Length: 75
Image 1: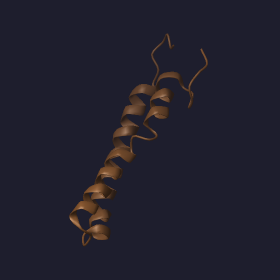
Image 2 (image 1 turned 30 degrees about the horizontal axis):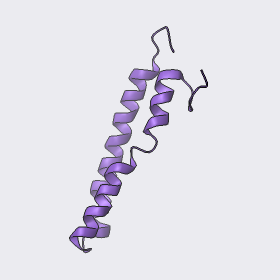
Image 3 (image 1 turned 180 degrees about the vertical axis):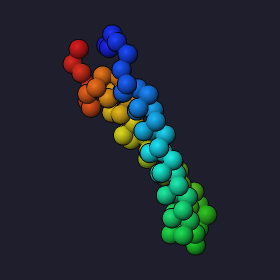
């Protein structure tokens, strides 16, 4: 556990906001062109998957923000 303030947390939050904004813009810009003619139910599934997929790297990123390491510690 960290005992002193670190710049990783504010920088990590800013990086996360920038990355999610870019991800959202890319999805909003290009995905409708690719799947716009697909059935509505299939589009819904695609958007649900894309709406959840950004969570996959989040755990390791939050661990890095707190500890400075990309994986769990054995403490």
